[in-house]
Image 1 (spheres, rainbow, N blue to C red):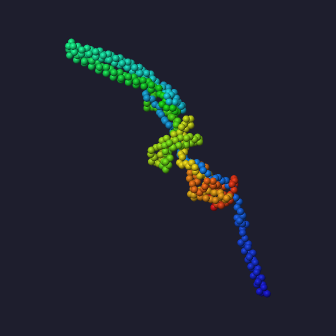
Image 2: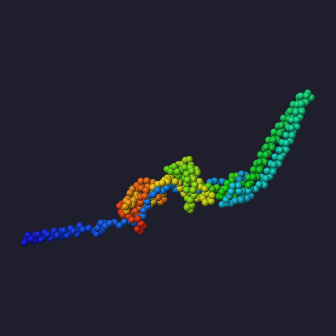
Image 3: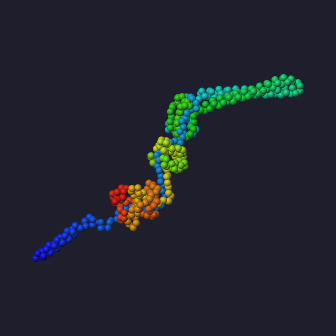
Length: 389
């Protein structure tokens, strides 16, 4: 009887232990979900394809005039009229300023009279020389015939030479008076100041009635066609500072102009380690004004037939680049090496082949090997730049 009781107790203990162990080792319902097939993640994809790519660098710059000229008179005098004002456009040869010419016209008349007097004196001297030359020739003939004395011949020769000297003096006096007349004529002409170039009147500093002098500019004119855009290139990018290289100029109003590098400074600034270069831009409509800010874009590298994918497909992590490659309905995380970057596309040097499809939207919901379906991704797609663990 005791033996039977012991057997029954032992059997109950084993049954109870088996039941408790079944409860303890049973799968948690939440964990049991992972045994079910995972639902495909909706993503958008794009194919790796050949296209032309350019890598550009943007530098801040400022617009300057092609020429800036300060207009000052060559003579001193009272300003009678100023024909232009601040902001006016003038063409080369247009009248700008008129200076009172009464005094200069009077000097011109005096110089003209002096020239006439010198011309008359020269004619008189030439006539006297001609008379003395003939008189000397007659004396020579008479001396040869024995009619005239040699002393008389010497006198005639001296008179002829003196007349020749008078002609030279009269001629020099005439040249001097002509020079005075030409100066007077220039002074009269200088009372009308004409524009030396086509451009805009940037500054007017005086008014009619003021005394003008060569040391005091009256106007400033700028020529802004072509416009000059000045930028500074750092030492590490000096290879871009090449005369003739094309450049794109963009203003703060998003107006875009095409130009070329026209001048490059031969040395670098010791303080900034940059070199100055000038981009020349055609500006027939005068949209670019001196003093404006403008960005200059230069092409650093270009590939006419690069294998490219959208930049949105690239995942950056700890200095490496990856992309999700779609194969057989699964997304595989693959390392890639990239090259030229544009605003929307990037060159793939290694890691993908032409035609491979990569995830461009929804990749931050993925893990390596997840099934995917191509379509619009769900709301709330994370935008973090790190891979999900």
